[in-house]
Length: 127
Image (cartoon, rainbow, N blue to C red; front, side):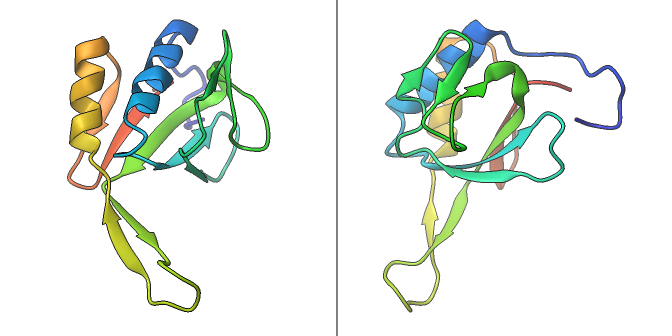
């Protein structure tokens, strides 16, 4: 986690389930994210294509090589711009994720610890 010894948890299991349900409803507009897990030094890049289809009581499956307990998620960030290869040996191209629409839908679903910048939408499990 951060350098703080006692970070404050901001999301309950129920809040994470609601986040993943809303995110699943917007899978066509937001499909790539970076995850920071508690105790891990690096972030992991994840495609949301199948993520969240198995929303469990205390974990989400279909990502990161197995279930991820909600309490292990420090934050998830969804960038506005995504670089990708449209076909093998092609130059990189850019796609735009509609993080504003996801933020609006999350606002309608409840209160979440979100941060919206010009480049990304981030949801925090801890601060």
